Length: 467
Image 1 (cartoon, rainbow, N blue to C red):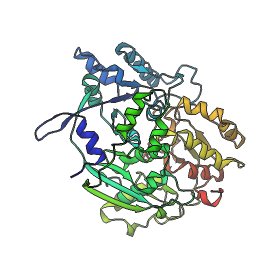
Image 2 (image 1 turned 135 degrees about the vertical axis):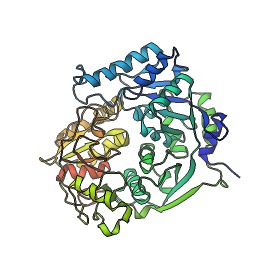
Image 3 (image 1 turned 90 degrees about the vertical axis):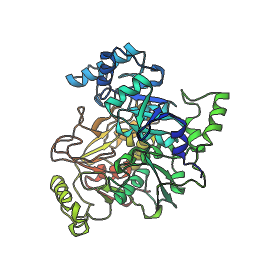
Image 4 (image 1 turned 45 degrees about the vertical axis):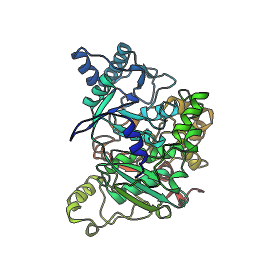
């Protein structure tokens, strides 16, 4: 029997198999940031140990950093301490760090791909759940806990049980205004937040192959929101073209050798998955969430489900979610009030996302009732946005381009949504209080976010933009 893409990479990285237990898995790249690494470094130091292979570890602060006035000292004491601690730990252990104001600083899952650090066939970990983003390159990438961060730093290995395999095929052409964010929100709405539990997912099919690398990253980024261990897409010419020429990509003969290997990273025709699903791309439309988990999503032109359409076992949590959001079962989604719009995060903070938003709002004006935070995912994205004139386009439409960081994706910095306010966000989670205590979050694509930003209400982007 042939092997899946996942099997090929996983099996080649197993150092040891523990009987009736997990595998000891070798890690090619380890990304760290300021939130989950301090305790790991502390544990290593307390045991008198050291970082095993600092050249394979890359650090960047992102969660706690402000997105305005980054030239000034970080005002929040806890945030400042965490960023300073990361810098100290990296200096003591010889780890490359792209600190605040460094030309390569940014969200860890944006920085890795844009520098060519992320490559097909690798195993990649980070103390951050959305490490699955890197799977878009045909790598096995997943988030790990603090104790595992310490293990990876000390040994360049971690112990992991091997997940089951799932393939999700999206076939056919996508409609107008449908983006990769809509694809993954659609999938999660069908499978629920637990539908991928225990699996590592390979996304395939003609609609997936048609996506750009940045769009593929969005899909893999949110694979964990359906409970999967991670998501991946087989590398192809789109992948190779994206990596070629980047700072840490192979060069010369090494490039040719790498591509020859990367081309072997495909699922064999006779390989078997533990589970396989297929969806029609034509059924996917612009999506938005209405509840308090990413699985509570619907087409923006539709309605919130009625109570009798919800399984009995889920009705209690559904009603609780409606109370938190201030919505009612059966409500129409279009026309719902929007107070804030956030475009950014490791899900949708790349240059293509900013381009799409800018193109949509061109010739229009931000609604006076809306506060909008447009946040690039890295200093390189910020630089490119300025060079391409996107900053000027945003300002002409009443928007401001902020500085890079995780921003309003989570309430760990100054960019918090006030209690009771509604935000359309291009980030990945809409849990209670995720963007600030009492905040109410609706997840959507940059296009749907743009539509909300110029109208002040939830709006189908196909109705107001020339898509």
